[in-house]
Each structure stands twice: as structure tokens, then as C-alpha cells.
Image (cartoon, rainbow, N blue to C red):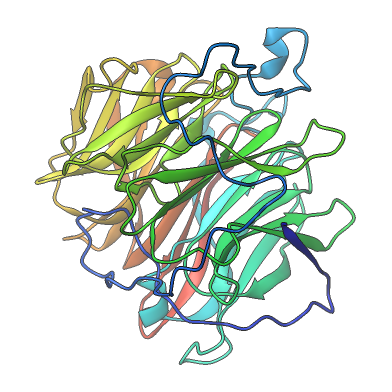
Length: 438
């Protein structure tokens, strides 16, 4: 069965086991360490609603009944495609009337910890910003905590501690004031799913209990009503998937069909929901290159594109026009590929301004402007590339000078990009949020 724990201000204490953040395999990174989760592999759990996927990975048998996904809007327009953005305020200021501002959200994280960590930022339908990061009590960071900072529109920051934790995590949000934080729970060898209640407090479910070992991929995404979770275990040739339908009167985490063969999968920004009860995953097959695969939720079927990516992929975006775009690293800098599922490399943009380090982050605004935030190695700075309104005319600008790490992006209530990151001028680091202000 899945287990559940309620975390409030007087939260329960969990055992902590240190592990370092894994980035997507093949990233041109200079600062990460090759640490892995190492446990003995216990037997599969007998879960009542996230149990074993179908044994047959091929076509559905004759008489197959599609998954009852339920809770769908009658009007397709109500889907609002992948539902990633807040409701946009009526008359936001023009881009040219604003400028970049960097705000310190938290500080005191040891540099050695931040080099292997990543922030995660999302915005809910009311425009509230949720920023996830790790907090340390001392310079050794022997007992790190996973913290989510909250800032409503026009308000100030407040902070909510979820769990003692180090390593991989990700944030996603569907309903206002109810973000979901997902992370690998080392003591329980499980995937922990911390859902915030609207009135406050975090309710924690766990799936795959007793068999989460060395991660080789981990991600969270959502559409209008469902969360989707991917997990790839090192040494296995499959990726596991789970879903949670918030529109159901009795929502439960359910396991979906595995993707196999797949030797590794994306971390944090390589799983994205589409607009037709489907989702897409960046992963490796049995070769060295990255591929993209699509899962049809209703038909319970996987399809893999025949075109491989030739870059070291960081982030994936499913666009409103149906295109799939990825940001990655080439020999001479940032590379952006866009196209459809059959030919995902039909448009390419090369930024020959030097090698990147760490992972990049990509997001699309409601007006179809694409943003990519990335770290430039030689200059030790944070840059943002932008292509306005589906025109495929790219420009890149430096938005922050200094050693930065762990970038994440989201779209705010004005349809502008937010960028969270660690800034490490010395032995300790700050958690910062970059945004456009009048």
C-alpha cells in the first residue's frame, strides 16, 4: 500500500541520508559529482493502486478497455492546453517598460552543496510563486532540509519546511495553494509525494516503497487535472511512470505502463504533458543518444520518435502550437531544437558564445515567447535567450554576473519569465529569484 504522512509546523522528523544531485547524463557540467543512491534491491511491493504495470509492453490485447481517466471538460477549449500558467493580469506592463531585478530569497547554503543542487520554481493560478530549495543549518550541511518558499502577488516571502532531505526533487502545481513536491526518500527507499493542503500543511504519500535505488532519471509534470511522475532506476532497462488525477472524487497514485527499453531518463525538466491526454519524455534507449517518446494515457501505448537528439539535452517544452522544443549543450554552446514528434530537429539554433555548464531551463509564455535560462562557463554568469511569439528570432542577454548554479524557470501572472538559481560569490550561496519589474 501507499503510505501517508501529514507534515505541519510541528512536523515529524525523518531520518536523513546524504546523497548528491544527479544531473541528466552526458551534461557538459564541471561541478557535479557522480554520486548515486546505493541500496540492496528489495522485492517489489504489493501496492493496491500503484502496483505492477502490465507485463505486456506491446500493443494492447483485443478487447482492451482504455484507462478511465475521467473528469474531462466537455469543451476541448477548457483544457487550456497543458495548463502550465497562471491567469494573466489584464494589462501587464510592456516588456520594454520593465527591467531585470534579482531578489535574495534565502542564504547560507554551502557552496559545495549548491554545486550539486538545483532550485525549482512554479507559479499557481493565483500568481503565487513557489520556490523549492535546500536549507542548511551549518557550513557542513550535515542535516539539509527541503524548503518551499511562498510569495503571493504583492506579498512577501514565507517559508515551509517539508522534510529532511538531500538530492533530487521537483515542484509542480495544478490547483492554487496546492503545489506538489516530489523527491527521492532515501530512508524509505521510495518516491515521496508531498502535496500541500490549501489550508496549510503537507500531506506525504509514498510510492515504489522499498525498491527505489540508484536513480538514473526522475521528473514530474502535469496537465489540467493530472500529475505525471517518471522514475528510472540505474542498471534497469525501463522507466516507471505514475499518475494522480485531481479531478477524481477519490484520487490515488496509479502506476502506468513502463517505457522499455530505456536505460536512463530526464531529471527535472525532460517530462512534459501534451494537449491530448498524453505526455513526452526525453530519455536514452539502448544507444548513447537521447530520444523522445510519447505515451497515450487513454490507449496505454508508447511511441518513440525515430530521430535522435545529437546534443546533451537539458530541458523539454511542449508548445501551444504542438511543437516539441529542447535546450541542450553542444561543443560551442547552447543549442535549441524544435519540431514535431516525427522530426523534432527541424529547427535548430546555435549560440556560439562558449560552453555552458550545469543544466539549462526552458519555458514558454502564453504569448508563445520561448525563454531559455543557462549558465555560461567562461563568463561565470547567468543568461537568458528569448524568441518572441513563435518568430524563431533569438537573442541572448546577460541578466546576472557571477557564479550561478541550479537554474529553474516559470511564467508569472504577467506572462513574464521568473528565474530561480543559486548565487555563490564565496564559500556560501544565496537562493535568488530573477524577474522583470517596472
